Image 1 (tube, each protein chain N blue to C red):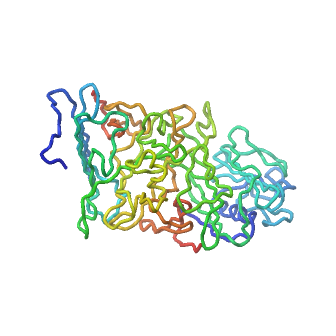
Image 2 (cartoon, rainbow over the protein chains, first blue to last red):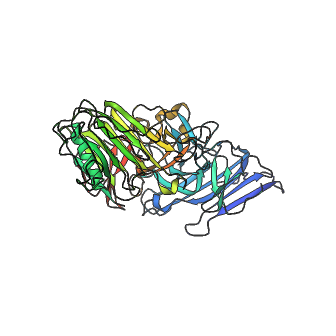
Image 3 (cartoon, helix red, strand yellow):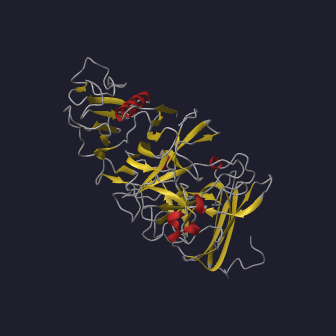
Length: 204
Length: 339
């Protein structure tokens, strides 16, 4: 994923290193680096299983793994993009244990409104899903993952993620949190992505 | 949860609506009032001809005789099994078999005039007003209905030529999943219609505030200040690398542009398509009137291109089928209908 290359900037007490981990099977974790006080997301590393309801029962490796480093980093405005050519690289192992097994770069599918021809999640500027008009709360949207293209026997649909969600309301700042009143837990914002967090509200 | 289906070949548009009434009643919907255009019936007028509300189809037929549905201005109300005040639809035949008024109300319609459609000025939404709903369908089309028989219910009906082809009529009542909505939303249901517009198999069943093919409404903030009925959009899925100018032909779901290669594709292990959940929202800057709705409880987007209207997809986990309609997968039962 990274071969003898720069993965961190100088971080001598100048950055927050945030890590969110799931402690029950199928586990999973995401780590990110952000300057103290806020700013761009500089480094990311994650291991995120796909929701079991969305994967083939015979898929022997239902986990995504990704990494990112850039000296400038991801700005808050929906910089988090996962595609075959994105600066954040994310792979899935397809057909593990079967013929034609391979590790392939995958895509996090965005939400698109055909009528206005805009990508609305991850939210970007005026292009956004907006909030529930009753409780004025944002609903972090499930992220579908696939290797998009014509049907193939070695790549294709992967599943959806539970711990990574798309932000659907513009104007969030990296490190900002969103409370889930149902669970009492927070989400933490990373350049268009909501990452599952605990009941604490970290001071970036 | 259980899916109930109805698969018929109607001789006329009134027979299609007649069959819809029968199917809805079997799924638990009830009829508090109905007319044949000249005679009005409800619990007050006909207390001895019970039970009220009607739990079975009250019409004697779908022709133009007395007490039949195929008469000018005949109308009926039909109420969700969740009870009076949960939601209600109203259908009125206009002056041709093909022309209808279709409306939906959160709290229920009022009116006792046999030839005049009942109204609900507060929560009602007219979806079609005395306009063409059906093409000519004299034994040439299948009328396909999928219904959920447990709360929060919901149904989807579409018309397709025998042997397959374009769909011209679609109607649905689709609850949003409980996990996806605000607990305070007392009307978490969207209502949709396609009225005599060609629905090709190419993933065209998407809605937007001004879409002309599929029109979908949601009642926002029912029972609160600023309550309103608004058009709502279906959120499609795209490859983020294809956003911008290329996006309009690059929607990965509903899969449509076979030549472009933009489709999600099957799971490469099981070689099975995964029908993708449909998020409903009114996009734009956050407001206190409209916005995020929720995720459809029953409908899904197709993620593999090349499907035909009426084609089925087997769900091995539940031993049920999905049936394809213009880019959407509609839940079906364990039978495989021969379109």
